[in-house]
Image (cartoon, rainbow, N blue to C red; front, side, top):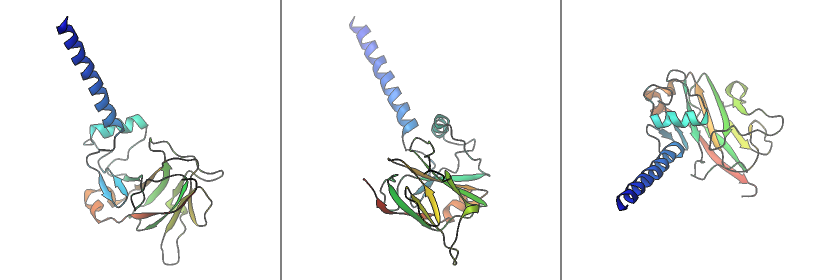
Length: 194
C-alpha cells in the first residue's frame, strides 16, 4: 500500500511540476536570443528555422505571424524608457531615431497579443507612409487615449499595453544591423486614474 502511495505521489508531483514549467515557458518573458535596445526588444530569429522552440510555441498560442529573417523584425516594448510599465490610461511620446526600413508600422497590443481597439474613427496602427515630420526631419509620435495633434496612435480602455514596432525590408533584421541601430525613446507624459 505504501509503495502505491509513493508512486501516486511521485506521479502527481511530476504532473504538477511539468504543467507548471510548461506554463512558465509559454507565458513567461525569459526568452533566449532577445536583442534589447533601450526599452525595445526583438528576437531576430523568431521567423527562422533556428528559432527557439518555446518562442515558436508562444507565437502559435497567440496566433501571431512572424516575419522571416529577410522580411523584417518586430520590436516590442512593455515599458517606457524609465522602466515603468506602459498603461493605456497614460499618454506617451516616442522620439528619437527610427531604424532604417522601407516600411514600418506601430501598433498597441495587450500583453497576451490582442490588438487594442483604437478610439472611435481612428486606425488601429500607424504606418510610415502616413507619418508627419518636422522641418528638420524629426519625428514625434503620441500614444494616448486623448486626441493629439500630429502623429497619434489612439488607444482605449484601461490596463497594460505593449507597443509593437514592426520594420519591413530593413537591414536591422540581420545580426550586424541590430547592433548599430538606434531606437525611439518612450517618454511618459501624464496618466489619468492611475
